[in-house]
Length: 71
Image (cartoon, rainbow, N blue to C red):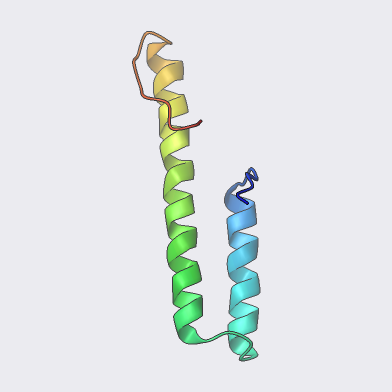
């Protein structure tokens, strides 16, 4: 089952800190830490896109036709 949970940069950073602690204590492997870091980077890119989109809409108004990525 797929669940949707809102996230922000603070949550992504907290997750990465948790992963670094797990990596330091050998709870996870380097490969798993790399995979988690890549996923966090992708999530951060989506947050940046949404911020840029919001700035563009605020600057140019709602007549700016930007496709919605949300369901």
